[in-house]
Amino acid sequence: MARFSTRAIEFHSSFVWNFDWIRQGLEFARRHDMTSLILHRNDIVDMVVYPGKLFGASERAQNIFERYRDIYPELYKYTPTRRSGPYQRRDYLRRVIDLAGRYGIDVWFQNKELSFPDILLELNPQLVKDGTLCPNDPFWWDFVDTKYTELFQDFPEVAGIITAPGTGESRLAISSNRCTCEACMKSTPQSWYRNLIMAMHAPIRAAGRELVVRDFVFEKKTQTELAETIADLPEDIIVSLKNTPHDYYPTFPDNPRIGDVGNHRQWVEFDTMGQYFGWGIGPAIIIDDYRKRMATALRHGVEGVILRTDWESLDGHSCFHTPNRLNLHAAAALAVDESVTDRAIHREWLTETGMTMLGANDLDVDAAADWSARLFGRSWDIVAKSLFVNDCVFSDSSNYPVSLDHAWWLAEKKNSLKDWDPSKENALEITEPNLRAILADKDEAVRLVELQPLLARKRPAALTEAAHTDLVGRMETFRLYVAGWRAAVQACIFTKFLLDRPDDDDAFAQEVRSRVGGAFDLLRTLAEEMKAYALATDQHFAAYNMLGWERLLTLHDDLAGRLSKMPQTSKRPAIVE
Image (cartoon, rainbow, N blue to C red; front, side, top):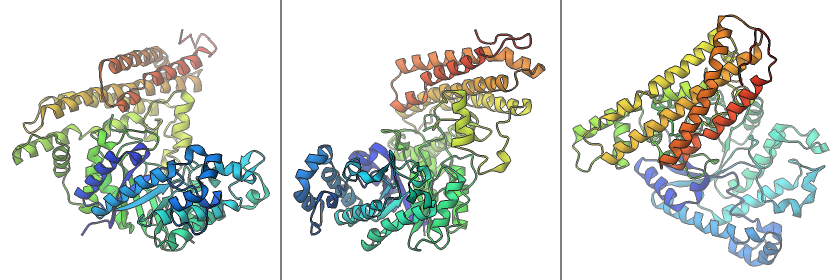
């Protein structure tokens, strides 16, 4: 018997609308005993629902074409570019659902509410008050009811809706509300969440389907407000929680809300692509993390797991494009059997992706799997010591920061670790011991990544030459990426120290002054190396997104500009020309 009763693979962004990738995902789900396919777009429901009622469709209309028959002139008058899009996407998704049904796989739609098409604002000008959208206008609750009623008339087979009401990434949310009307002044976040969720729940329940509410939030305050709402919701509503609070940061503690959702069923979400741990361009194989966090989830009564394969802000890239696909194999296997071995996971990845030779014997395939396990065995250590600074998120979704303020905003405000782990209150403290430890981490990351080509050099007998060549090439990209991180963090740390402690003149301060120029030079040198590498190679586009030489130059200019403005004294000679 599987450990988790619901085991879902999740597609975001462009892959939702790419039938070849949907087919590949369904094939993976079928082979790996998964139960569900989740299709995520913030506006996925709005992309397949007009709604007809808003344009005058008869209440007797029971599907999109009957509604379209009533309203096509109005659609063309008010929103011609949306006229045919919803019914074309509706037919596409119905085919996806039909194909999934052949494999016994449920399909779920996942979004972020409130979401709506622009034309609503023209048809309902009362929704804008003093130039700001009002989330508490009663129109919204009727709109939500209509939207989901029509959705399930066209998609009665959809298993349910998964929604995140607490994130500011939706088009309209109470967590980012700027309206100051009387209704908004009297409203609480808890009452708004309840109004929205219950407006969704009624038509979804009437269709005999299920509603899942995600606790995706950006701060502890919002998580608490949403949790207080969830506690009083109908018990048939499922709660889905990211495995770590706020987002998928492997250095963060477990989400404290796991096991604390009242009498609701629970699902827990995991990332396999690596939005915050290298996109697979910097491979980060986190099998041990999955083992630990899934065991914790089970102890807290979790019954379902969701495995995210891509990221909605990065069209055209997923774990299927990189060695991080190993994470998907690992998480899928561990969701069924906690005793699966690392060798079995690596072996399955190599054989299923065609990286081993046809007819290779079992001993040689096992040897290739062991080689793969060694090659990627320190990959997470390398990424953790590169992108993270004393466990804090220093990256812009794995990209280099573009300024000193950007780096600290990412680490201390947007992705605050100390919000969830008080012991990290001084994780970025500008003291000599702390800074030396941070710099040592970056040096160690570079030392480890430079060993990767040596580990990759000797090809196992069962591995194809093409697969070996590909992996060796990826190690060079990995090396450049990590080198960029050491240079970026060094330059930021040195600049921060000099700005915060301008009058220090001890041995460490003198050392920093002597090294900062070299750190700036290294940023420029690596930027040029990355630019030349892009011109000389032809990898998946995401490799060059990640080797962000323009980001490094932008960071260089910001840091150098700051130091050039410091007053020059006998203790503070000019540092940057």
